[in-house]
Length: 291
Length: 154
Image 1 (cartoon, rainbow over the protein chains, first blue to last red):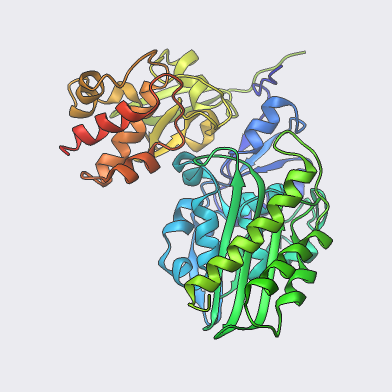
Image 2: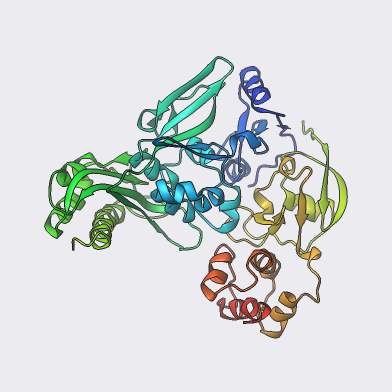
């Protein structure tokens, strides 16, 4: 049964300052960015109907900047803008790959990185890329601005380190260093436009075939996106050879706790996780010419 | 008690300025079909999966079902009614047999129109990528892709 939104008011702030004032004064109001998830959830009844603060027109929160070793992305930057940004393609290609697979062209044109982060779906496609890039989130309120690391931000399933009067204004990530190479992967039930059954990102710091550093994150296999620390440890300081890759891929099982749901069973997700991590490591090894 | 909140929205629809009163959280799809009686834009899933309600906002394809009316204010909206029936793309859909039941056709034409506007000579892969969010359950896409390529003069 569809919930009608005829009695939902939508406030449109003129600027960021006004948006923060509304958030401070009107408890219970929800922030609307691209609307690709919130409007669907509200109409289906999955999210309680409430008034909305439509921030999608705040152009000051749409930007990609390269600041020294950091990439700063305005929270309202769309996935189309991220996928086509030269700065992101060059310095955070794992995120560019994730942005390209987040959904259809129509979804990429509306969905924002800030919305993806705050909506907090464990299957959100930008998140594994943000985890391997050690992203930090800049939250603003009338009381000031604070920065939270992405792993600290998610406290549990859809539980965030974020007050109701705060707005996510910027996502900051470490630019890829020389020697680093990585990829995003996604298993959806439909290639063009799907919610991930399993997704993830692998970022290796290589010197020849020696793994100096490894970051692996997986989504849709736990209440939040997780870093696969056991798998990372299985790689660090070792040569990128097939047996090492298998050992690391199997080690991801120690970091995940998938469930059965409409998109796939827990057993299927475990198998996908191992195989996709292996395939991604193998792809990287082939690309850098060590396999 | 049911109460209805309404606001007035002004935007440019297919080149003409329009004003419409509607609840601000209503979608552009609901307002096009039920307030403005512009029924060319179809409702399929109403949740961003099927692409049937694709319209252009400032030239970019988006789902009308996921666009709140506040996100339309002051913008340029193009629907299937804004594309000339004699446009080579429309003619190519007819001539290639790219239409069967027709429900997905407006969304497919609008999405392809956006592609050809910025890339007049797309490859087959680029065509398939541009319409990857548009579901068709009749044609199997082969004739749709052929139609877009034909309109592009390929």
